Every structure is written in structure tokens, then in C-alpha cells.
Image (cartoon, rainbow, N blue to C red; front, top):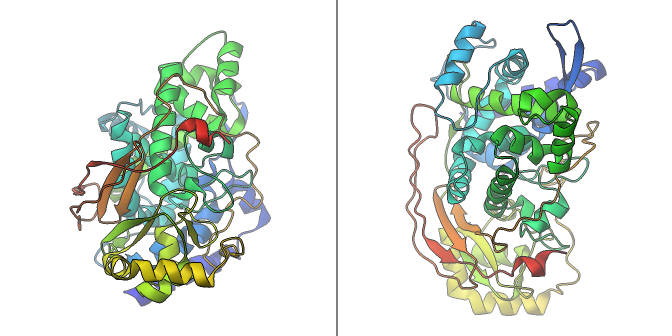
Length: 456
């Protein structure tokens, strides 16, 4: 099965070289002609770019190592045709709080997912096993609609190391200022925007705050993409309407496609079977756990003493930018498989002493992200605006998530203490017909600073 998977990946990557410049432009935009015969050019969200589908998405470490083709599933190269009424009826049946409006623009984005991006949807369905439990728990913690779990599909195509041309980073594509506003550390050694757990909780809180401003989830989504100021500007230009589809013409080009793409992503990730898209099988990695260190320790030292592959270590700890866990700055977590955790616990003093003796924390070289198959997925695509920081009156110390493995989920809260516990594991596939993922969650504590200390 692995050989078949590698053959598929090789074929997909080979096809990338055949894409012409004109086709690349089509990947970044959708041409729409309205009822008045007016031609509109709508920028697609960055996660929908063809480059993501054929390059970054398939180069993710966990996708290469834990996804397989389901030989028992009969996929086709084309999607069956369904009438607009049938698609609209399916959208109306989805158990969502956010309005899943159907119109010709939404249909264009659905067609993009179920036709040109079929392979991408297949991979993302497999990768969702790793991330959907994290997203759901973070969103549930802030009482925001669970359908927002598919927002990273259009933001990053579920690539935790995705970096846009303008610097938006991670699964939720946080800009630097907004990330720091919501408690994500970004410095020379760590970038929490790449941490699936911390970033998910920050995104959930940001989305909640945006909803409190607009009291409408489609407007909150638009603001997540282009900032509250641009949405307010569109509202004023429309004469004061607070309906997304009314202010739609006054929004930035990409934001006009953002909500339709979100609706289309929910549709594709729910009704993939009806379009003969086979999700890739997920072989969840072995159980993982975390330890907390209050001294610096390098990845090379951990690989030496804990017998763990450095690429897996990087995959499980994507927030560390220099292959260094900077525990000397503040208590920091290291996530590893349980066998490696046991080795670390048995030799902790030796490991920390060895690292202090053999490494100078100021001379660590950056982990070569090109070697770890991380690439900026918008070589020629430019987002001309960014997520905007929003100062809310809500509590500034936000709940973080932590201690996650692909088969386990654990959580933290911000009172400066740390506790450990065992977690329940899940081995089920995450699909439309079977979504039973069991992961233990318990409020524990993670040492962190107040927002005031992280404003930067």
C-alpha cells in the first residue's frame, strides 16, 4: 500500500511541472458572470491554490508517513453531476449554526473542490484525523460553532507549517501582530502559530471576539480574513447593511470568495462520498505525551538519548524554530512518543547536563525548513491585507490547549502550574459516517505569561 501511495504522490508532483502560467493564474482566481452579465474576478483563499494541493500538502511529514490509499474504495476521476437544487438541499440539511447559503458563487467553489481539487480533498480528509479533534475541542471551549473546524481547510489546506507570502503562518494563518495579541509567542526560537493546539485555541477566541463585534458569523468570518476595519468599511459603503451578501461587492477581492469557499469546504468534507472522493486511510501514529523542561535542550540531544527520529520530533513540536526547546526562558513542553518520554524521564538529569555541556544556546542553527518540506505556498500569490488585531474587553489570559497526540487530547489552562495525566486514545477513522474520536480532556495548567507580557 505504501508503494501505491508513493506512486500517486510521484504522479501528482510530476503533473505539477505540466501546469502552465495561465493555468496557475486560474488556480488563484474564479471568474464569475452574474445575472446582469457583469464579469467578476474572485480571488480564492490561499489554501485552495493548486500549489498547495500538489506540493506542500503531500510533503507534510504526517501525510507521507501515516496516510495510505484505500484500495477498497472505488474513486473516480470525475464527480457525478448533481443539480443545483440537490446541492442546495444538501447544504440545508447540514447541522450548522452558520448559514450555509447556496448561490451560483458557492457552486463555483464547490465545483473547484469536488473536481479540480479531488486529490487535495482526499488527502485533507485523511489529515483531518490528526487535527479535527483539536479544532473541535478548542472551538467548543469558546462556544463557537463546530463547523468552523473546516476553516483551516481554506486557510492552510491543513498544513501546520504553511507560511503565506505576507507571513501568515500555521493552520489558522495568523499574522504576527494578531498572534501576539492572542497570546501566541513568536520570537527567534519559538513560533506558536505553528503549534496546532495553541493556535487553535487562539483562533477560537479570536473568532468569538469577532462575533461579539458583528453578531453575525458570516461577517465574523469575513473579518477573520480581512480585518474588522475592512468589514466595517464595506458596511458603510453598502448603506449600513449587515448582511454579508449585501456588502459582498464592497469587500476585498479575496474576502469576497472567503465565505463561499468556507461553505464549499464544509460541503466537500461532508459529502465527499457522493462525489466519489475516497479519503486516504489514516494509520494514527503511536501514542504521545509531553514533558516540561525548565532548561534548554536541543533536538539533537533528544534524538541521541531518547532514540527518536529528528523529523518526527520536529513534526510533533513544530513551534520550535531552531531545533531547540527553550525551557530556560520559560517552562516549555516537549512532545514525543511514550517510549521516548520514558527514556527522557529515566535520564532527564543526564540529558540536561549533557546538553548544557555540549551546546551553546546562542549558536543553534535554524532547522532547515526546506529539508523538513516546509515551503511558502504562495510563490506568486499575494494577499494584500492581513488579519487585524482586535482589542477586546474579554479576559486576556486565554485558555491554551496542550498535551495532544494524534490519538489523544489534553488541555491546559493559564494559572502557571502543570499537571500530567493519562489520556484516552482513539483509533477510529474520522469520516462522515463514523466520527467517534475519543480523547480525554481535563483542565490542567500550563505555565504561561499574561497577555501584557506577550504583547511584543
